Image (cartoon, rainbow, N blue to C red; front, side, top):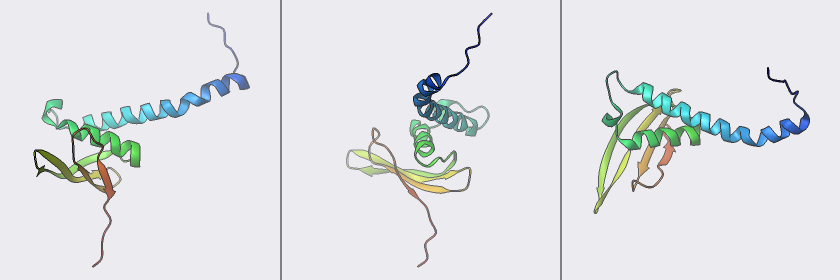
Length: 117
């Protein structure tokens, strides 16, 4: 039988610094699960490029955007390497343009807003 220890102010203070890290970890796991649920039935993880999972995590962490789908993407040759660019849509309807010059860098994300000329 375990003994119930009532929370005191001291034990609550010791638990508080770990909450933001726990919330960030839960958000990252949620983003991964959302990305996994977007794949069609029968699709394997090998079918999607690795950068899509990284993009989904970065959108979730930076803008609280759960990735709905990639609207378009393309690889642009840059000398000996290639850049990845495209547009992604969140479940709430927001859209972000993304670019990444090199595979080891973070994506540059810009909110798409209607423009009037």
